[in-house]
Image 1 (cartoon, rainbow, N blue to C red):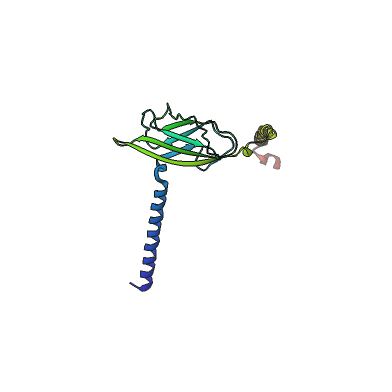
Image 2: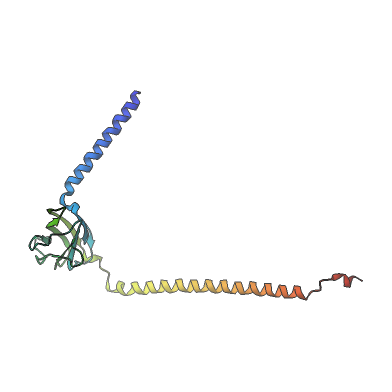
Length: 199
C-alpha cells in the first residue's frame, strides 16, 4: 500500500468521524422535539395571521390523564396567549390542540411538556419552538378582489384557446373528408377503358 493510498484512507476516516460527531451533536440538540412530528403553524414559519389554535402531533399516543399535558404560548413581551387548557383531539390520540388568542405581529414561543404512552411505559418530554406572525403578508383589499378576476380571465383564455384549436382540427378534418369523398366520386365517374377513345 502506497503512502498516498494510506493518506487518502486516513482522510476519509477523519471525514467520516467528523460527520458522525456532527450527527450526534445535532441529535443531542434536538432532544425531545424529535417526538413532535408536526406542528401547525410549523416550527420557524412566518404566517400572515395568528391562528386561533395550535395543533401539535406526536409520534405516539398522548396519555389520557388530566393535567398531564402543559403548553404555554407567549408573545414577544412574555405574556401568555394560550387559554391554559390543551386538549387531545377527538380524531387522533397523538394530536394535542391548544386554543390561543394572539394579536399583533411578532414571534410566538411554544413551550410544551407532555406525557406520551410508550411501549408499556409513559414518556414525559418537553421542548419549545418559535413561529412568527407578520400581518404585512396579508393581501390588500384591492388584491383580494383582483386575484380571483385574474384567475377567471386566465381560465377563460385557456378555454377559448382549446375551443379554437378543436374548431380548427374539426374544420381540417371535414375539408380532408370532403376532398377524399369528391376525389373518389370523380374517379368513379371516369371511364375505366380509355382504349375506346383512341380509335
